[in-house]
Image (cartoon, rainbow, N blue to C red; front, side, top):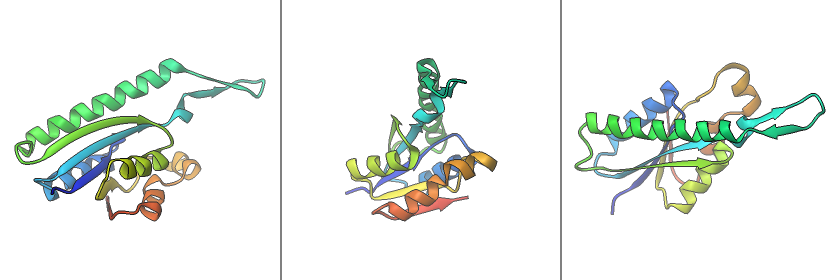
Length: 146
């Protein structure tokens, strides 16, 4: 039975390096790319202390995720692995680390391959490292690609 390899994609160079690593090292296996739309990115504050959720911003983020998945399919076609490798794509909404871990658990993932980080600077400090959280909590092997 083929291994099921999960590759979270956020569009960063590191996530594409992880995808390329998975495609070249897990040929003949099942690879799923997962883009997670963080709902916190669609929340905007106002001066009254409340906030509102921009549904259109969320829809655009989902569309960007679907475009990333389409690019992953194109890259796999270019690498000429689709005859031997099953490639699936998914876009989910949720907190990235938690959603990656839940997806892996719910879909019998055997291995996670992900980029070392997708954000930089203040965003990485404020949001924490998704790769670190997944590595610490995943019940399966995790390969981090830089």
